[in-house]
Length: 303
Image (tube, rainbow, N blue to C red):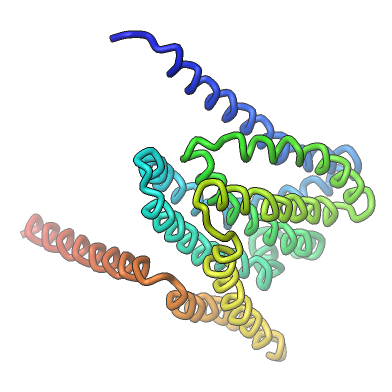
């Protein structure tokens, strides 16, 4: 056993970068609420936080589960210089992420008013549904770019997101202040969308060119745009059916929403790359096997 200053220096720099990124993340995710409470009546903060939290939990929850599983694998691939395997794993991760989060995003965009009305009150739905729609788009972009962030962290390229965030904070704060002043809580939501568009223009190309050494536009088309276009067509058509119905009942509204989700799941599945489709089928068969074993074990125990 011994003490290595080189190892301490390497780990120390990584830890410092991660702490700075975490501090900037807290600033990015809290400063909008602070400015809303400072510039607008306190009731508007309640409306804004309601839309913000619904968007965050509906769209970002799956990524928290998935990224925890992918980070160690991508770190191992990169440390062993298995770049081709890293590309394959990252593309599978990205496609699965986009395939899943498109559903809550488009439900919030096309069924946001109905969700807010059921979850809260009609008054809240009337005031915040536009804010919810804008925030849903922002969180979709944010979750999409979180795949690039996990890639950068897992491969030790922490300076990429750190420098990007340092530049962003000087631009984001005055833009956020101005948009809230002009457009109330909708302005705060627009600022969040603009921030994540900035990530698309910076974090996406830097991670793909420096780490994966591939064209970022190819990734964007295959892993993001295909699911967005399919999902948008399906959910927009579903919403048009609801709008064409005279005095639609709750059963019609939610039934069409559920049907749109099912149609998207089937249609979007064909845009997944073949290895991911095979993984999905194997996972489904594994679940059925486990269910059968559980039922058999339970039956034998009762007997």
